[in-house]
Amino acid sequence: MDKKRKRLSGSQYKNRRLMKEAEGIKLSYAMKEFLTQKSCQEDTSTSTARLDLLDEKETPMNSQSLPEKILGESEPTLEPIEPISELLVEPPARETHHEPSLSGSEDKIVSEVPDDSALWNVSSITPKIRQILVERGPNQIKNYDFPINQGRRRFLPSHYVKVLNNGELVERTWLIYSVTKDAVFCFCCMLFDNSSSANEWPKKGYSDWGNLSRALTMHEKTQHHRNAFKAWKELDNRLKQKKTIDFEYQQILNMEIQHWRGRWEVLKKHISQLTLKPLSATRWSSRLDALKPLRFQIGEIYDALFEIIEDKNRDTETKVKARGLAKNINNYKFICGLILRHDVLYEINSVSKLLQSVTVNLSDCVNMLSETIQHLKSYRLSGYDQMKITANEIAESLKCATEFPTESEVRPRRKKRLFDYEKSDDEPLSEETKFKIHFFNYILDITINSLNERFTLLNTHSSHFQFLYDIFRIKDMNDNTLTNYCTSLQSVLTVENEFRYKC
Image 1 (spheres, one colour):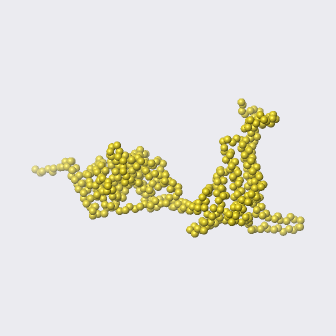
Image 2 (cartoon, rainbow, N blue to C red; image 1 turned 90 degrees about the horizontal axis):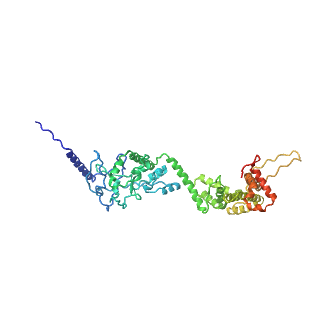
Image 3 (cartoon, one colour; image 1 turned 180 degrees about the vertical axis):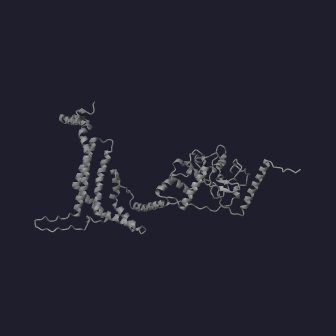
């Protein structure tokens, strides 16, 4: 009778398998003395970088610091192994990633984004902030005295490492620790996971240190984490290789920013008190603020333009533009026009601010506008000479000629007269006379007429309601004046022989 083959029990098969796995782990440690370890990828969920040597003062890792067993046939239980700090060889030096230079607005964004992941608002992360965080990289805190929770447990730097079945050690670059919250987060899931799983621990934090190894292993196998990790590494590689979609546009934008920043530095070198502002089309105050630096610091602006012209490192186009601006500024006609505009805007801006006060009534508005119009009329009659005196002082500081330059050297054609009684050609006007007629008087006339047209309706209403704003003067009025005011008010409030408002 043939002997039947004796089959081992399940427990015996399990013990044999565990013995083989333990023997394989010991052999893998022995091979490290003869072979150079190379980076190993695993399913796009772990990085390829090696773990730095652990601090010699740290205690050796026990079984609690290693990844715990996940129920399944492919991952058996591992026996306690020797301390990792004694088995690892020193890895090669990592490449230092230098962040590109950022503009002023980007520097502000970087300063506002905290390093602590617990302070990030995941729902409001913009693509620009995401790019800056990827360039900065995850900040893994290792040399820190981690606090102990109520369960007598704490986070250990050994959780940054994953131990594979063959003994390979792979660093979890996506795992980051928050000092403020005493919890761990997933770097890639916080930035690239757009799923509805916002309440899971990778985004809200995890602090159950007793079950951390199990949670990390389970999270690495999720599809959301793998997609987020893949998107993170793809963007990181593109940024390092400068192959992003908008790289060319970003490069052009940075060149333009550096170009204007250089001009601004030259301007600030000569002008320390006031800053140049753009012209506004809506507010008188903004227009005056844009004109004020040029009015009172035109000499410093001219020096800044001259420095740009003499700078050999500047390109030809910049020098030509600076030379054209300097030539236009160093002009007596421009200086006179600058003073005229500033005086008109200053007068109108003063009244504009008073009209915005809540204590000003209709009667006060009419009086202030009337005074403004009278001041502009007086300036038109006698302000030209005072404007020239101020312009001469500025021209002297700029070493500019105090004469109006000739705009054109083209002479008018002289017509032949057939008879002696024909009228002779008019003599051409001088440049100063042209400026006074076609510029000085023209601007003031337009301003005065504009004020009269815009506030005609206001004057009409004031004539009807003005006596009501000073009610105490009614008792001093005579009967005829008071009757005229009341009759005028009645005519305004009456429509088709009926009062609009009934008491």
